[in-house]
Length: 441
Image (tube, rainbow, N blue to C red; front, side):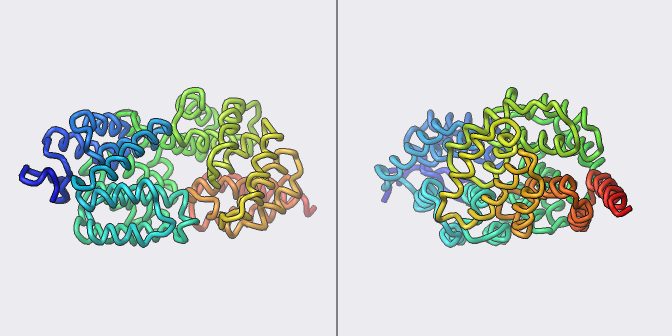
């Protein structure tokens, strides 16, 4: 029996009760959950409002922690998570079992999916847990022993009960795209955007589909319209701007891509969690395409902070790109940190990629090609999306071309072309074939 028994409990749109008798606190919490699922930066304000109205609402503290963490405000996020755990411990008589387990899953996430699956079997409308699991697995799926299909399996439990929910469709859109189900991903994104036009999760999935299916002009048009009409506060804002810059590079508009970089991706103007990955990826592509005098210093400064942070294959590979240009000594430290890892299943792949990037930065292109070429088949273990992993493939191809094997580089890009029609790759392949033909004369 809870101390709220006898009061009118508040219920969300999935039929789940929330342990507050204050209708205003509940309304603020429900709106904040939707904002969080739409990757709207206003979610933190909404959860903070719910906490202000009902300081004992543990799940509001949890939501606040999640939204602050997604914005890179880690110290504040830890404080919010600590408050949620304390309230979960001290107020067990108040909490619904769903809420208690939600707090457990988020603050002490299990290494495998079974606990998430059991929770969603019982509570298919708990999309906060599903969204958290999807985000967790986007960077930690190797440790969880699963791929994108693991998230889709989790989502199937919710889809069976809420087949047309905009938030669920938004979560699934990118997962479907990464599972090669492009038509289904596009349908999910369009459904979500129809019912929630400001859903950044669906926008992200949709843009990935357009990239992967070679519809670059459509991606340009969609993103231009998006940035013209959508509120910019979002933990995904810098990453969407990265997609915008990639569109320019696909069209061979390097100056436009660099302009978009300076306007929204450069660490001097962006402080989102994805800034390091996004900024390094744009500049490294420009470097490979033959452009010099690039603004690496702010990216390298940001990369140095990553060296002493938690290990992440995706983030560390991108930190290495900046350090290979601007700070070889710190890159050596980063490589040593990964060699010292003993439990990460992707350790050998990351070490090989870091060694390859370091060799590339030192002009040892034969060694770079050897290091990265040896793990090409396992590039997915870097983490992130295929578009993000492509930077490793690009580095290998550039190293091969510079070390006298443009034909093999062209073959690798031709193989990627079977997956994705890329204007940039077509130009690059043509140049590599010319180099290979000239070498045979």
